[in-house]
Image (cartoon, rainbow, N blue to C red; front, top):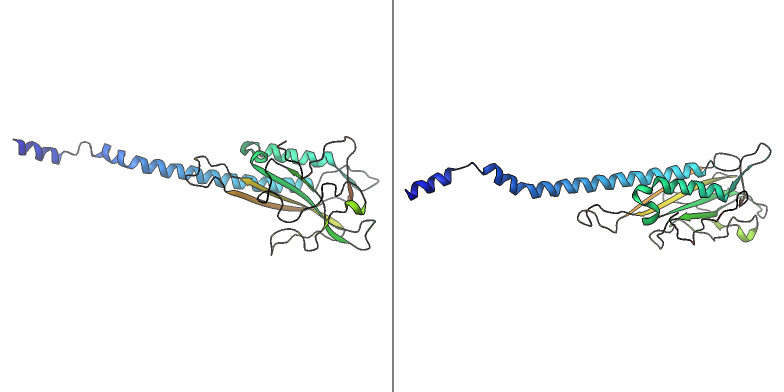
Length: 236
């Protein structure tokens, strides 16, 4: 009788499905979490790239237009486009975990030049992060550069242009390029299980200035605002 019961138990498969499910559930959870994490990483990369391009595009268009003179770029215009980028990236807390650098790469002849000179005339930044991983890797300039139309605030000469080797961006003669660099510390959904919490997302974009812009300086009138200079670390 004992042998019969043992054989019956051996042949009993009524709990097989439940056992298989219990064994496979951890693997299913693991694969599902991995899929969600990598999908979120891809979505974040795409969003950062879109914000970078939108900011460069917007910065190439703004300014105080006039039928009688070239378009004047004001600090309030720059602040507006940077604020737009911040709001666009609010969902991922872009300016909390990252830094945006907007550079004006110009190839013009200023009143103090004898010929056209390509230089980073001015830079503006927003974001709490700072340091070598977040600051611009393609060139910097002083916080006062571009605030007056004088040689003292002429900016930094950049004859080779800006960008990675082999993909350098140069401004057209007599014109300028808005060059944007974004460095963002990715925030994993599941700690560092699938993607390291030290993973940086890096994105760049550039647009040629669309209008006939006054490249002599960045004006700070009507209204007067606080400049988003790159020595400041602010999320808004």
